[in-house]
Every structure is written in structure tokens, then in C-alpha cells.
Amino acid sequence: MSLRERLKESRRNAKKTQAEVAEAVGITQPAYQALESGKNQKSAYLPMIANVLGVDPYWLTTGNSPESFDSSEITDPIAVTDELKDQFVWVDVVEASFSCGNGESIEFHFDAINGKIPFPPTFLKDRNVTEQTMKIIKAKGDSMADFIKDGDLVGINLSQTDVIDGEIYAVYLAGEGMIKQVFKEADGSLVLHSLNEKYRDKVVTEENGKNFKVMGRQIWRAG
Image (cartoon, rainbow, N blue to C red; front, side, top):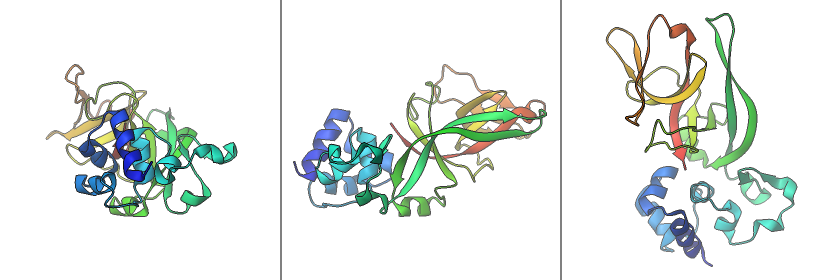
């Protein structure tokens, strides 16, 4: 199959529209449509598109079977091959955990790196992040549905911990890591808002603020 045929078949199998795929990887719909129509034959975003569609990035890019590579070269969830690895910045997919010290200090660390996802260098440059300051975590639960669903991959910028009103952040509160929309109140408190109406807002005040920490701002999602 040609690239356009692989894209069309994969997208239909994933039950996604062209607009949904384009939004997930951060390109315009016409740019994606140019790939699926055959007008464009190459794009640095193909590995990201493959991840959104749930297909092997090497197969989508080249049409060749990934089985031709040694298994030691496969990194879950993306195959880092010699042909592709130098074209992209590979961002860690991590498991996050938190540790509390004396009740005032909260430290965030990664328990495990579960793989890598490739991004074009321009993607990171446009968002002012590097492979050190951007990490990818997996969303749990449906509190942010339909924008972020259970199991979605969420990219966060660890260097952006100052709260911008209304933006989405990965945060820690009272022993729990979560992804929430954060609003600033006039009295200095913060409201952690869930997009799913069945979940109540959580309020961060001076009293419980010692058990609160912002991990980073959400800058990307796929699922």
C-alpha cells in the first residue's frame, strides 16, 4: 500500500476523523489531508500520527514490516530504529510518583520509563520545551473526559509550574496525583476543576496548600 492508503486505512480502523488526528499531533487539517490524499509523501509528524492511530510508526512511514528489525531495537510504545532515531526528539513515557518529606516539601520523581515517543524538533521548539523538561504520563480515570480520556497519553512541561488561569496541569494534592483545569480565585486559593460534571471541584487553600504541588502544564495529548 502507498502512504496515503496506509493512512486512510489506519485512520478508519481507529475510528477518527482527519480533524481529530490533526489536532492530536498539532498540525492543521489541510496538512494532514495533504498526506492522506497523496499530495505530500513525507512528514516529520508521521511517527506521532502512527501513535495516535495505534499502528507501528516504521510500517506507516515506510510500508515495511517492523519484524525486519532485531527485537532489542524495539522500545515500547515506539520502535526507535536507526532510520528514524536521528530525525526526532524522543520523549520519555514515564510512571510518576510523589514523596512527601516533613509535610512541607513534596518531591516528584519517576518510578519507571515505559518507552519513548518521537516528536519533530520544531514541535518542542514551538512549545519551548526539551526532552528533559517534557515528559509523558498516562491519564487515569474519566474526570477530564471528553478532552482527556482514561488511558490517554498526556505531555506535560515540567518547567511551567506557575499557574495560568484556566490552563490544565498535572498536580499533586494530599497524596494523589491528578490532571485538572486550574482556576485562580480572588482570595488566593486555587480551584482544581474536572471537565466531567460528575466530579466535584477541589479547592487548594493556605491550609491544605502544604500538600499541593504543580508538576507541569499539559501541552500535548494523544489517545
